[in-house]
Length: 413
Ligand SMILES: *Cc1c(COP(=O)(O)O)cnc(C)c1O
Image 1 (spheres, rainbow, N blue to C red):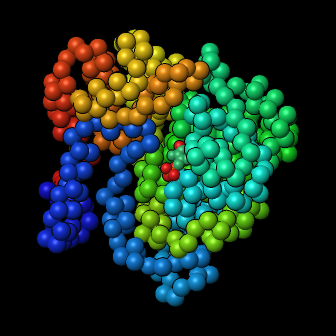
Image 2 (tube, protein in one colour):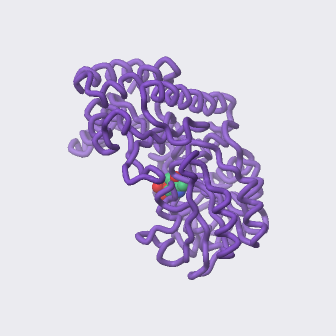
Image 3 (cartoon, rainbow, N blue to C red):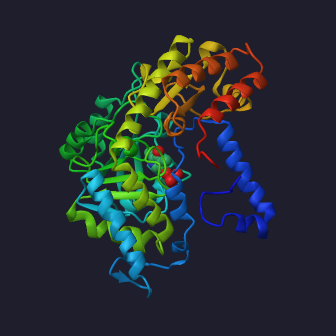
C-alpha cells in the first residue's frame, strides 16, 4: 500500500517509518470507517499531489506581480489560475484564494469592513453560528459587539422576524448569514433586504454549502452578499483552506485584509491545490456529484425519520442532517460514542431550543466514495440498530468494513 498518491511516497517510509506508519494508519481509518462528519470529504489524488509538491517551499508574500520575494514568477501563474478559476466558477468579480482556513477568511472579511467595537448581527452559537460569529472564546466575540439571532423552535429555520427586529434595534455595521448546522438553504435575498434596510454590509459565510453552489445544487450567495467567505475543503472537495469572493469595489480592501493585515506568506502548494479543485468543480461530473450528495442526504434523512429519529427542520436540502436521537432513548454524546465504536464517524452539535445535544452528519465524503441511495438506506438501518442496541458493534463494524471495501476512497492505494 502506498502512503499517498504522490510520487516517491515511500521515501518517507525509508526515512521515517514511525511517521509513515501514522500516515498509513490514518489512511486505513479513513478507508475502513464511514466518514459522516458534515465538514469532511476526500480530496482527489490530483489535489493531494499539488499539496505534496515543491510549491510548499516557496515564500510568496503579496499577490501575483507584486510580491515581496524573488522567484515568484512560476507560483504567480498558479495563483492567477486559482483566482481566474474561482471567479469563473462562482461568477464573482474578485477572488482571494490565500486565506489559510475558513476562519482566516472570516477574520479578513471583518478586517476589511469593520473596526473593533462595531456591532455585528449573526446567527447565535446555540443555533449553528460558527466560533467566528461572536464566540467569547474567539477574536470575533472579543473585538466586536455581536448580537445573535436564532431559529424558530417550531421549524428550525432562521427566525426572520427576530432578524428584522434585532437589525432595526441594533443598526449593525454588518449582518452575517451562514451556519455550521443548517440543513436547509439560506435565503440570501432576505438577508440582503435586511442589511439594506439598516445600511449594513452583508457577509455570507458559505463555508459549508459553497461546494453545492459550485455544482449548482444550492443557491449562490455571490449576487447578494458584499463579501462571501468560504472553505475549500468541505463539500467543495479541495485542500484544507479558505477563500473570499467579492465585488470589484471591495477587492483592494479584502486583499489588504488578508495580506498584510491578518496573514503572512501565502501557502502556494495550497493555492495550487485550490486551483486543481476549482478545475475539478467546473466539470459536469462535479454537478452530478453535488446533486448526488443532496439526493443521498435526503434518502438518509427519510430513512432515519422512518426509524423514529427526529430531524431538525424535518429533513434536508443540502449535504447536512441534524438529528435528535432522543426518541430512541439516547442523548447525542452516547449516540456518537456507540456509532463511533461501530465505525460510523460523526459530530455532536447543539440542538436549537434544547439543553440536549444532537448529531450532525453529512454525505459529502461517502458520496465521493461512490455510495448512492441503497448504501444510505443501509447506513440508516445500521445507525438505528446501533442506537437501539439491537446488534453489537462488532457485527456492524464488519458490515461497515464490507461496504467501505466496495467503495474505497482511494482505489488502488
Ligand atoms: C467550517 C466553517 C468555518 C471555519 O473553517 P475552518 O477552516 O475550520 O477555519 C467558518 N464558518 C463556517 C460557517 C463553517 O462551517
